[in-house]
Every structure is written in structure tokens, then in C-alpha cells.
Length: 250
Image (cartoon, one colour):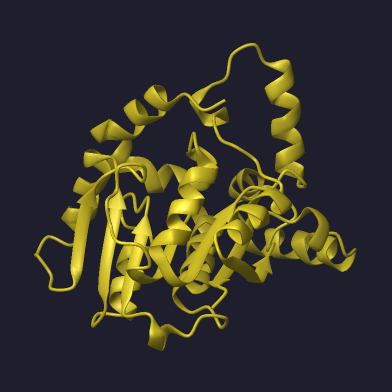
């Protein structure tokens, strides 16, 4: 269950916003994870970026992907949206000058008022898992995109998903850290299909949970472990997170 008020209060805290990315992605593995995300979203071989002149990022936070996108495509229009003033303040500190082609909006997905199919590419990362009405938000993302939709989420069929499933049923009270969803890939695919999109690429890069790799804090050890587990052929079955590229069915 997602406690909307508690989640919003957490992200509205200026102190949390200032240290948010450092707490989430740290050390050598954290740097690897950030680079993986940047490559997936800004250099994905399944996306023809020449068609992506108008881009929308939902749940942009402090700009972990906004800034790499802006640096790679400085001549495109990029609209970055988040409902937390505090998170957006951190983004504005990184991009203090008002830039032509970059628009930063403080808004929730539910209240976002933009024309249908106004953007060539809509993307969001680490967002779907925190939303109360994730189906409605995903459907709206589809309506806003004329061509591509890129996203990621934690799957139920994973080691981390199993751990969360067990904790949700044994803990009497959830901490904020526990308040995120895990998803069936089929359920996400169904919402996409109902809204005119089909999955054209799916990646599951890791077998072991990200928090474990962060604690190991040695990219050589993480790489070796993942190579062994990948050799057993389990990554396609229980790998996480799931990264999707979806395209509008024209």
C-alpha cells in the first residue's frame, strides 16, 4: 500500500532532497547504475532519437537523467516534471540559468494538463513503483507520447520482489522505504497495449538486488557474481529492475 501523504512529505523535505541521490546511488556500483540508466534512456539502440524533438520526463527529481538528456540533446525541447518543489530546487541549482528548450514544471502526473501525443518521447525512471494509481499514470503517459515510452520498474519475479512480498505479509507496519510496488510484467504490458503501445525491447540487467550490490561496494565482485548467475540462465526469469522500450502502434 502506498501512503501518498507520507511519501509526498518525504520528498518535500529539503534535507532529503539535497542528499537524495547520494543515499540512493553511492560507491562504485552506484556510479555503474547511474551510467547504465543514462545509457538506456539517452542512447537506446531501439529509439530513433532523430524523431524525438519534444521530450517529456515525468518524476525528474533532482535531475539524474534530465541533465544527461539535456547535454546529449541541447537542441531539443525537454519538459521535466516533478511534484516536489524541494527536488526541483536541487535541479535548478544544477542548471541555474534559464535555458531555451528546457522547461521545468512542478506538477503531479494526475493534474498535468498537456495535449495528447504532444511529445515524441516520454520517459520516467524509478517512478511507477511509488504511484497510487499506477495504471492511470501509465495510461496518461501513453496518451502524451506520439511515438516512444521508456520506463523501468521492480518485478515481482525477482529476488528483491520475493523479499518484499514476504516482508509485506510479515510486518505489521511498513516503513517509507517499504512503500513501493512490485509489478507483473504482464500487467504492465496489458496497460500499454490497451493504450496503443507495444513493448519492443525489455532488459533485466541484474539478478541480485541493487541494495546488496551497493553494500558489496566493489564493481569487480558484482560483475563476477552477475556473470556467474547470468551463466546459469536465470537473468531472463528473475532479473531486475525491468527496463522497457515501448512504441506506439501506428
